[in-house]
Length: 584
Image (cartoon, rainbow, N blue to C red; front, side, top):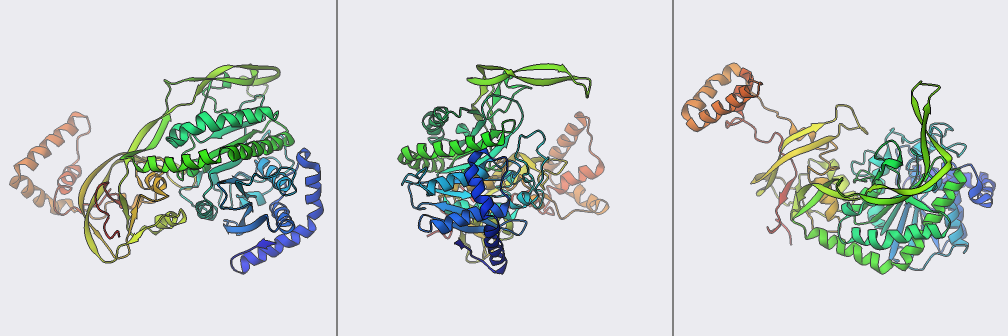
């Protein structure tokens, strides 16, 4: 049976799904009977009814639960096979982009095969499957928005009910989907996370490409272990199953012949978010120019190879995750931004197709074509090494005032433990000032994404209030805290505009009144006057002389009238080595 928690809305949807399971039972059996040779993908209610039937048929071995709500008002489901206390837990997420539904079909077949004994599940593995994550996009069925994709006949839409790309939402959590997912992910605590997709772009021979969590970004020792031990076994395992796989084809130039570069999945993306919890992540990218049935089979094969490999290396993976957390917490400064190292170029034997150019009958310009009659395997450049582009200190604790409730809600969804400040108080803390920053002029995923270029940090007294939160970093979510609360981090809450109001100055001055005050300040302070003259001269030397208002503002900012909190980052820190206030 379906296990439903919540009120009448969820109960109503449960009844709809149960009714749908009766109406679509024959269709589900037909889908299973045809296996991976179909060119159709189930609708949301059909997928849920399939898992409902499995849960009813094997009640002691699996269960279907609701883990939250989606933006379209439908519940989000999780299908679990095995014991959640098993040494290794694998989470598979499907249809984050519902137009890329290979994983939806593959997981339905896979779960059925596990439970009927066709593909037995190792005893040391627990699997959890999200049947369809982007429910809103899945309900928007169409045939054509994935231009040139070879099947299925109908599929869902990339944007969710709020037209958000959910694979950019894992930190900011604008969607109900993402906030629910954060809570579920933290509770399930997967050792391995798979997000199933369909790729586009260049043409090449394999049906499957793979984005593995970038090892340099993942950190040590887990990054090296995955790179040297675990990932090679996935590639050889796929080869052995007759489903050869290549790294995701993110071309440096127009074609793969010019080389490829690893895709840097920062925390906004699914597997980048998983890395914040030291979870090994994989994004499967089945190639859209292969038939749908072939893409489904390749996805299904990868899941089986991954499970068998994980079962054989359960102890190593579990130990590596623990060591990774300990190594991160020992850092004084942690990487929070990365870039490809163009001086370190690997070689990759790539199975592609010859590219050629001809004149376009549409544009009259040269156009690219791939010749499938001319396959090749040759060495191409592979930018596979990433270096740290920015770091941030790892404090003993952060202090987040209760005023920033949207941030606290997201921290709590990730299992973050905090200490409530019991009374109004003033503490000497590390205060960060945002010195330079810039933002996109156009909205991106509902935000004007902001880059912090420069900050300064100093110790200063900070007024705090009863109910503000002290958040020690020495906890399971330590890396998540550093990469979301360090303002210079690439996907920090600061980058997603959660703290923009703190950048604004609120109090100002009237020029004609402040003139006398400014004159008196310069006359009574020779050092201030000298600094003012120097700064004014430097402005003139650069060809941007100050206006009278700018000159007065320079003096105002150094007066006791200035509020002193504009551009002050409203999250404070207890530096490492100092005692955490109110901490037992």
